[in-house]
Length: 378
Image (spheres, rainbow, N blue to C red):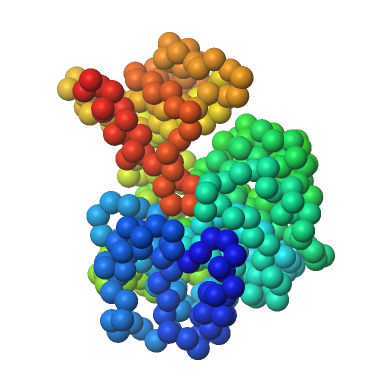
């Protein structure tokens, strides 16, 4: 899957996939041979697969055996149609994401369903927010949309021309990771129509917008865990027929904790990232939501490190706000304790110029952990 001008070569295959007429396709990155080889060698191209599978889209993990969500043509169509229904109708899409992940693929599939040609912002050399102005200026059509990840939105907000360009669009979908509240406030104050999305490869991408499920999506909470079902659900994982995430027919068991209030979903954190420190449970995303409100913090990631005394200790990596001096550990501890229990305050701080990312735009927690452990060992 190319990112720039070569997209014309793959669009016919995606049209076949949406029609349910072609073979099943496994999108791999053309610019990353190692990743393409890893996916190809693990997910069995050329081996038999269910006839209704149109795409096998990998999750964003990079450790262990890759998991490929088997998506049918009907699920992909249901996702695209429900998205356009929620946004107010079909339109032209701006592609600013890698095309081998579900968010980028969906921009192309929605374009096909809408009968429009996507405008492409080439991100093969990284996302340059200055390019948004010319890209948006070249878009035509009654309605115009794009999809971004939070780090892209943060960068765009630091560039006035990019901010102005995004404000011209009818909707800017933001997903792939949690968007900090201060970022949302800045974007909306600048006139950008931000729509927070929640979903994953296993649900054809975003299936819950601003906490409300799209048409055809079902949500239930079981023991604090979010379960997703409905028309956009994957058939399962390629080569893993008994995976527990799909153990209950018609439902996908996520690793997210959350709750429903009057039908609106709130995600409180990842169950598999919870920190047990001093005998108490700390949810990293709750601490991140507090730290991101510190005026000197632009981005942050909280995680747990092994600790002989506490079991785990809370650590944080931060990217300072532009023009700000990096906060000290003492600053952040005081800031957290003002809102949360002292056990949630970080005991270790790592300052970075930018967060390492995984997939389309999720913080690479494994890499951040490596940085912290390497520093500790030195």
